[in-house]
Image 1 (cartoon, rainbow, N blue to C red):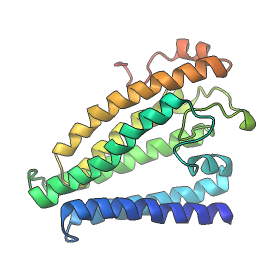
Image 2: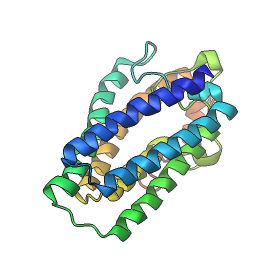
Image 3: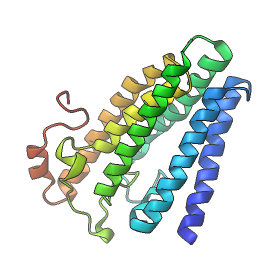
Image 4: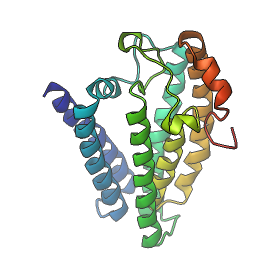
Length: 227
């Protein structure tokens, strides 16, 4: 019960903050894209979170921990700062673009397609977390949980599928919010994730038995057939 209460409390806090950013930047609460995005995200987060509390409570506890932790490399703590600024700043830019400045004119059909992309990205991310019970939000070796190399599911295609899914999540967010300019966040996030992958791979290669062999078998780190 404590885990579920923590999940619900964090859901309220995080999406309350995101709502404040979106509607504050939009300058109005009469913003269909903003309500659509928050509605979809809150519903999915609660449903998937409650399911994870039942099937993999250990991973949910890890996912609910803060983005800065004791065993986390300093480099990861530093790279998380621009990543979080991009994520939350991007929400503000998208909302301001679509509802305040009206730089982007987007048909409703594209916004609904963005909902489909957003849902597909979240389903992919959840599949990744169901495959890898050690998918913590920070770079670290979870020796207390017996962390091992995962080679199945999406990990048989790309070494960092959570980050791959995050790129489509950002693209879907931009479309749902009605902002073409928000798509600029996708390559920006890819660059920052590329830096973080370098930090993560160094940690995994030195601290996790079998990761070197896995990396030789699965060539692609972030985007299949690209890098």
